[in-house]
Length: 114
Length: 113
Image (cartoon, rainbow over all chains, first blue to last red; front, top):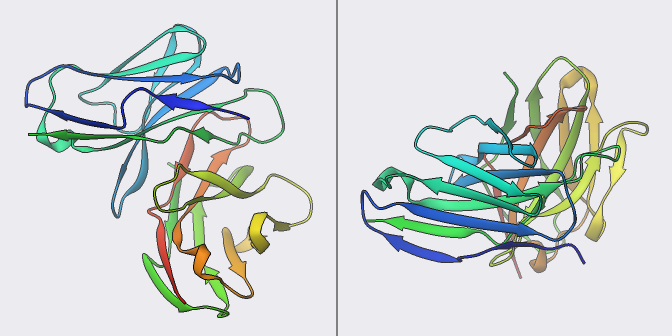
């Protein structure tokens, strides 16, 4: 069974703190993604990685960075958390081969910034 | 830029009622289309997908969707909903061969028993 695991389900941080969200997939997928999910806005792409050490900005990268040192792991970093980054963060992975790019999602990490 | 529009943000139905959730996208090229579902407390999962061939696609749990290219639409349907279909539904699109999948705002469906 495919598995995308996010390290923390719930986090509470203070404004200005550095936050790490980690994601691990066991499907040997090349592509990995970080989205944030907000009510009424759906999912918005923050960053994605199409291979190890490769990364691309998504639609809302400001205030975020990412790291992909190993194929199975993709980390999202908030250098200095702000209250407007309170959200649900979803990690996803996808096989680069195949006819259609279905995404496999983790359970999500709900971050509250006080 | 690509965008996805879902017509209804909240839908309330009684069991056995028919369901149709609207989805329109803006992109002129070849696309892959998806519906994802998020049941309460669970992760997002694929409901169905279209990439080529028969424009009427069938997914899990009796759902189907029809791709109408001329209308840039990919509406989700189910003839008779159940209480267990209560969930949030997301329409999504990506450019064929592209990396980015763009999601709509989602539709929250509540089915009354």
